[in-house]
Amino acid sequence: MPTNQGPEYFAAERKYLQSRTKLEKMTWLEEMIRTSVKHKGTEKLLADLRKRLAKLKKEAYIQRKKSGKPKVSIRKEGAAQICIIGFTNSGKSTLLNSLTNAKADIASYPYTTKKPVVGMMDYEDLRFQLIEIPATFESESMSLLHTCDLIIAVLDSTQNVQEQREELVRILKENRLENKKIIFAKNKSTVCGLDRETICMDTKSGIGLEEIKERTWKALDKIRIYTKSPKKPKSIPALALKKDATVADLAKEIHKDFMKIFKYARIFNSSKFSGKKVGLDYKLHDNDVVEIHSR
Ligand SMILES: Nc1nc2c(ncn2[C@@H]2O[C@H](COP(=O)(O)OP(=O)(O)OP(=O)(O)O)[C@@H](O)[C@H]2O)c(=O)[nH]1
Ligand SMILES: [Mg+2]
Image 1 (spheres, rainbow, N blue to C red):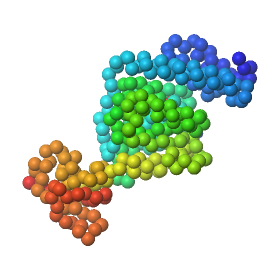
Image 2 (image 1 turned 180 degrees about the vertical axis):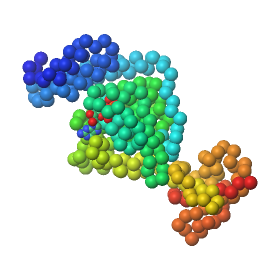
Image 3 (image 1 turned 90 degrees about the vertical axis):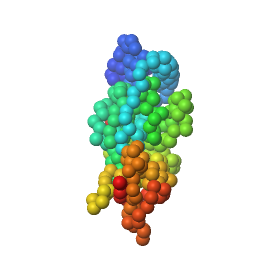
Image 4 (image 1 turned 45 degrees about the horizontal axis):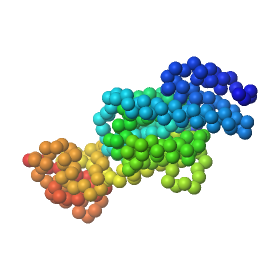
């Protein structure tokens, strides 16, 4: 055992040795890794701790798969539902709180978030629902990843980024989520590399938050449509529809029976045809304002 560890490390080690559950053990192993001094002399110890942690995570995952607990379901609100994933302490709650009205607990203590936390994010007249997925990756909250529209994966730049990325990709694959849209964001990082695919952010100081919003909207690959009533201004928040959406798609989005009472619509935009009367098959464009007239 190395003799040059500080009191924080020894306190975590004591707690680890007293732990009974897998989650407790994982928590204190994470804490031992975090608080351990890092130099040549502790490399072997750290490798051993990481190996033990990886084994525990795997066992915990198999156990959870068998637990059969009811799946968490959160009703979609706004233009899209976006899940935030990442390992413990990567800064998921800090990101969620910075982008939305949520008040998730933030702490350097591992596994602070134990249940999914929801918040609403505003971006250019659109509202998005953001959900932090606990880093324990329990199967009951993993179900949210199947139904959400996009995943933001937070990587902790104070740890091995490549390893985290590969491990997250493996978890997604294991859950048959490999085809899900995903954005990678490297947190706690003010120095950015050449990898333009990965967003570089420091949520604590607000760096990269605008980019996260822009990239989220871009990745969703949708168009923003405003509705309005006659003689009224356009309604905000706007709706997000698929790129080739028509007025009929918009009517269905407003209400499933809206098509039955639809008479015609007027489209307002920056073109010379603004105010034009159209039918259900009219193909909408980004930023169109649609005034629907019903019977
Ligand atoms: N320097 C720095 N610290 C950060 C940043 N974002 C988060 N932190 C710190 O990292 C620690 C963990 O942050 P959280 O937001 O709680 O992380 P989390 O991913 O939600 O963690 P769990 O819920 O435990 O899985 C806290 O001490 C934060 O203050 C950042 O951008 N820069
Ligand atoms: Mg959290």
